[in-house]
Length: 292
Image (tube, rainbow, N blue to C red; front, top):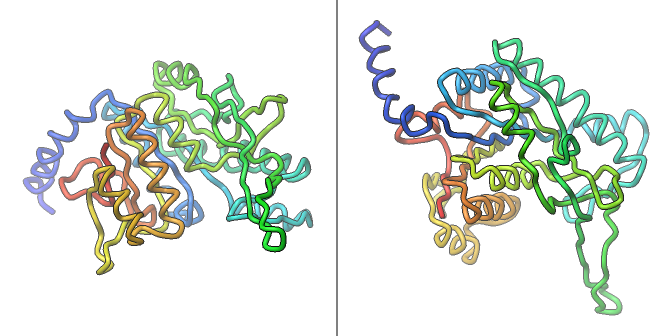
């Protein structure tokens, strides 16, 4: 690539730089991209670049595989109900240790090594996320009676106090947030990372919620990527079964965010190198954008 081509690329990004300058983007980071050292390095570079050119990135990370591996090492058995890990007292201690400890500090280290200034916190810090116990019900096949399932210390956001995020942004610091919260009893609750990212994006009225996953985005009946959806179109695709399985909660999380004031929520493939930059600074984007 010669210098004229590089200059053209920079000029082509100018409209997007204007659009996002000074705006906050919430990035949910997880999946296989987090376990690949080269993709992790590229992710950190992308986050630092966003900060350097005037955006305010907020990173919310997951860690399900790492939690599972640690529980296995400690010989603590896990039970899953509808894809949710039943979290007793012993398990929630490991969850907090892995999420707010090793994973959180690892991501902070990547970003700092790439030239940024990151600080790791959890949803419990400064009462960022107040959680309530997550409830699920199930019909007993024998009695046909609906029963309430006990998931232990699994929670969902009840409220978000974003003051600490605003304070860190003013200090040119990139927040890296572990998805735990404080329950009504003052104890730690494990919260789904997608749900945490959506709640935080809604609370700070982010310009974008960017959800890095292990799929390209929403696919149509011909397995082709759908690059843009309105809220009504997304609900229609759920109703007719085109959006199904594990994509449904991700889309519902996007719908919640945009209905609470987020300008757009994107599902994109975190395994694609520099997917964040492609999504934000090119006309084609890199995933499925959901708008209100």
